Length: 243
Image 1 (cartoon, rainbow, N blue to C red):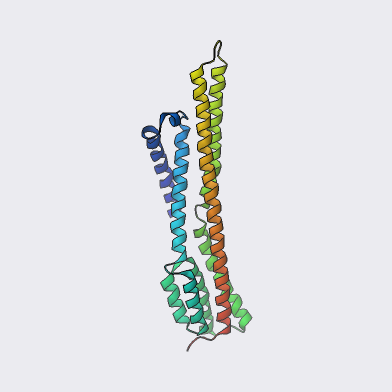
Image 2 (cartoon, rainbow, N blue to C red; image 1 turned 180 degrees about the horizontal axis):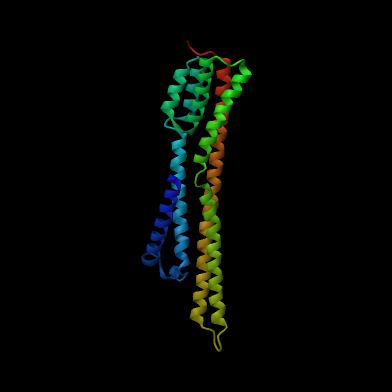
């Protein structure tokens, strides 16, 4: 729900700002590209908004403290059998990685308290299942708005192509008139075509770069979560908690 509201607000604000920029801030030679330029400006603004939102969200997902230090402290607490201390470290760190690791530790604590686990293999499977469930909840939050970025890349290219086609149509119309071609209209048509082409490439290239950047960053982060979770699981099933 929050995502759809945010995206809707970004959509309308981007077009309003795009119209203001088009009407009052752009030089005439860019305004000659026509009203499709407003859409291209809006797409770039939306892309910037999603990039800023993703940077903020990923920074929040990493937690408050340094991740390697956090993992080292949790590992030491688990190795020492201090399960409550490990949980406190997760509460202090917060973020996606802390949430995933906390879910595994909590499942371990529950299994030990209930005493219904037959062996290490069963305990590992139960803890791993809890971690996988927590990861499935966290990953969609990390990947939020990536589809919007790839959509902007595609739409921006198509809008730019549409403006190019419209500009070329106007150019050929000016050339097809009887007598001498209308040089002014011919130049305006070519200008409109090239400006929209440039705008479409800017939004398209920007969207592709942003999408690939965040996909790579999220993949690396989830891989780090998997590695850390596996190390914690191994420590949990081989150590005994403090009484």
